[in-house]
Amino acid sequence: MGAPAPELTLDVERIRADFPILQRTVRDGHQLVYLDSGATSQKPVQVLDAERSYYLRHNAAVHRGAHQLAEEATDLYEGARAKIAAFIGARDNEVVFTKNATEGLNLVAYSMSNAATSGPEAARFVVGPGDEIVVTEMEHHANLVPWQQLCQRTGATLRWFGLTDEGRLDLSDVDSVITERTKLVALVHQSNVLGTVNPVAEIAAKAHKVGALVVLDACQSVPHMPFDVVESGADFVAFSGHKMLGPTGVGVLWGRYDLLAAMPPFLTGGSMIEVVRMEGTTFAAPPQRFEAGVPNIAQVIGLGAAVDYLTEVGMANVAEHEKQLTAYALDAVESLPGVRVIGPPTNVARGGAVSFVVVVDGIHPHDVGQVLDDQGVEVRVGHHCAWPIVRRFNIPATTRATFYLYNSTEDIDALVAGIERAQRFFKP
Amino acid sequence: MKMESLYQEIILDHYKHPHGRGLKDPYSGEAHHVNPTCGDELTVRVQLSADGSVVEELSYEGQGCSISQASASVLHDLVAGQPVMDAMAVGDEFQRMIGGRGTVEPDEEVLGDGVAFAGVAKYPARVKCALLGWMAFKDATARAVAGADASTSTEATR
Image (cartoon, rainbow over all chains, first blue to last red):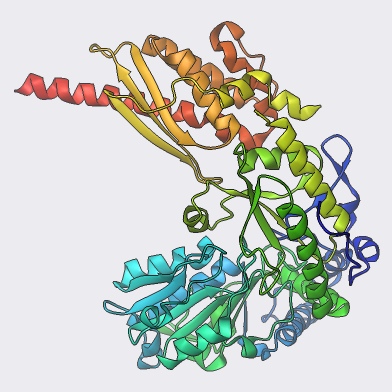
């Protein structure tokens, strides 16, 4: 068996009191053990109250209308932007609200293809034949497919960093992958499957040296660790609200202001314009240029409340808590006979996503997940929207447990007991 | 316990000792189906009789969970050697049971070992797993028939 349970940084009982869903039972009376925060996090009552209070008292379309409700709604919406900007060390006007991180990444990719038919100020975003876009083999489909598609639309070439057997980026060929031809490097901060935390600043420095832009998928890092956009070294950072205690339907794209100001829009229409005539239109300054139509106001306000909640707990504490859980889980899962962790085996430069396969007697991850679910333990199974990773490791899929501030060592004990039960059940 | 209603003994048996696994030649139609949510894949081959009326052989190869792989094994048992019309009817009945959210009383006469999958209907996330082989079979058969039609018409114009 694994090591004894560590003393945890956070008071899990107190935190769980804010998450009513964690009190419920599933599958015939089993206490819910939620280990799927990497897919989406649960929401504290503070977030739900913020959304409800907005609809009960202040609902109006933002940035238009001269009435009091519109003023209040706009203040709440922009107030949330300021909170979220402060949370990631950004200026307010560098924070663009999207519907999710996927849309944020597509926004950059489509703005880049629109650059070809925009003015000279957008020239640095133009890519075409002979240019290269660099990604990695551990990207979520959201940070891979948009770049594949951009290459297809423009004739640029997609290149990528492979992975080591431990599930880290293979940077041994970095100088032949990032070259003078590189126009953009898109990579994930923390892998949603492997848990690997990538050396973003180091890669960004290489990219900037050749004049390439850096796009960071921070979906699994902003919710789980202190994060500063400037320190990250990236030019664009995308993350989703629903993975950080916020509602679904809101994501964030951060971009350096000078870049956002030079970038053509992706979605066009109301709210994003400066002057409209029948002959043509000029566009608003960022961030409004990239927020066409009435935005997801309640969700943005909810995300603001989520950021308040996380700030009060303290992101350094969240990170420390998850590090303790990850160490405990890695130890316990690795000590199970016939179980192999896919991803870094050591708890260094690694976050709280523990993927594994039951190799002895080959129990399929779906079946492992089903047995766990039967015990109330909710994990993710499959390729986790990062199909190339499972191909790289020559496995069909993985079972994945992910942790957050409301998880305890008891949750991990339940996971381990469930895996053992699956092994007994499927014994040949 | 619920889990046992899903993983019937018959299913585990077919999973551990699959029937008809391994792609065979010759074949008149082939289809490769994937379940994009989980990455399960299955290739099914059928060899129809010269007049296209009988499934003379059905073979498959793939990777996936116990439900998808056991279902393919049962598919082989129920369909190989059967008239195409009957095989399609079995497929329809299987699909009706699996898609019935647990409210459909399956016809054991028609489905044989296939009734063991009745429990799957209560787990919506697993429905696609159970149907993977059957959908690939229907597709492979349609291709075999289309191929036969194509070659017949080619001969007719020659």
